Length: 552
Image (cartoon, one colour):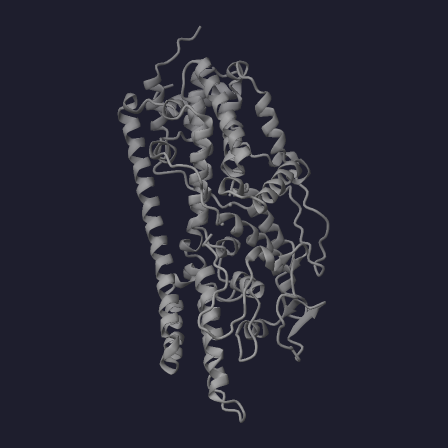
């Protein structure tokens, strides 16, 4: 029998096979076996999404998942203001609830309604519909939906400029019979709109042009109405706090990535110095599932709702200005979440392939099965799928002698729950159950719902791809955007849950910075543990030995 190599030599070789820096996420297009579909009545496509079994991820490579906390409408001053209901209330079972507010009458043909629901309109008419007037304020569903999807047609800073222009023009009305007191009543509505924008889409204001327009408009209001100065200061201060928190989060991610790189360097030179596995750090699967939930909610928290739409836009649809839509910061937090999913999948595979003895590998597989089950019970479906994905990677699944020692009954149940057939019917049923539990929960523990991010993004993708943005008459297809907003709104609600579990910094540090093997390194470790079984595997093993060891 072939002599088993020493653990330190495998670690050194596998570490040498790593690329430079951490795994980079690939925001790849979803697989072609899902048919593009939209429930929009104006769309020619119909039916339900269909997915074939090939979509069960065999690796974490192609996987992709949203935040700023949303605040309920608040009174800016003592005058009566339109009350904005909480987000779960503004969408009924069919989508947009058009009866929440009494909207202004639209006498032109620029906006099209059906049964009191806005279905389409010209871009200019929709912008005008966004701007409040003396006796009108847009409902919150429209504000969120338009600010979310308008970036498919117009840059946020250009939209902000148009809104500011319309607001200023309204305050200059000199028509007879309209006194200054009535005009002044429009100021709190404008401030309410700005509050909605800055609280729900604060990352838009990282653009200096956005911030400049915001300050110019609020200064105009404050100069003519001193009573609003305190409210304006509050809007600006809240926005600056959000942006400061985002900068701190990005700096933290940079430090974590640097630590992971440093540990990888140590692994290459002194593998025995960090020769630990996950069980030595945390031997309780439930505790590890709790810490994974901490990381998931932390990452979700900083994803802006607009990042889902920005991820669909590869370049500026108007003037091909790559510096705007191509700015990586537009989807930076979403990409960081994708990177975390990839890292967890590769970490699971690394932990399984690293031990030399079969019984140790089998023990780690059973450990991760228990962790995955606890993630399912918590409602953390994203970590659950990442773990399953890691165990389904080819370097792990080929370890037949190791799997023969594993009790796989629990793993089979988990795979059944995440079975991709019938468009992930089992998973979607479980997700609905978790969502219902969250609605009636009395504790944060029962409120946790963390969806499988890749599938969520693919649903958004095909709503976007399956229906045109514009109708034949040139109108914006707003019925489609109600559907987009409804999808995004759901996860926005789930993100607001505060994680109830106690943090364990040692475990979190390991999960975030422990070295992970590249795909080649995983294959090499797998072949060293259980030799190649066919000519293809033998050829690959020789190639890997040649490239990683420098010899044939």
